[in-house]
Length: 88
Image (tube, rainbow, N blue to C red):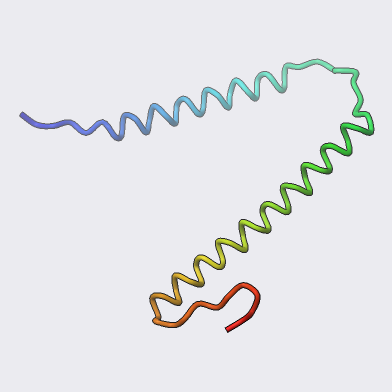
């Protein structure tokens, strides 16, 4: 008896689900009427605070990934990895 591989069916099903979700989201966004709303100063400052937090988190993530790759390549090449503060 031959075993069947269902990986392709799972992939196609996931892609179809993604297309459905994106289509429904696009429909909901474009079918909405005017909201007649405004953003008060408290909401605006909250959005700016979230953006600054996102940028700070991304900077730390980039630094950590860069240091991880540097230590990985240092191990491969047989060198001692440098410390983040520039020490030996």
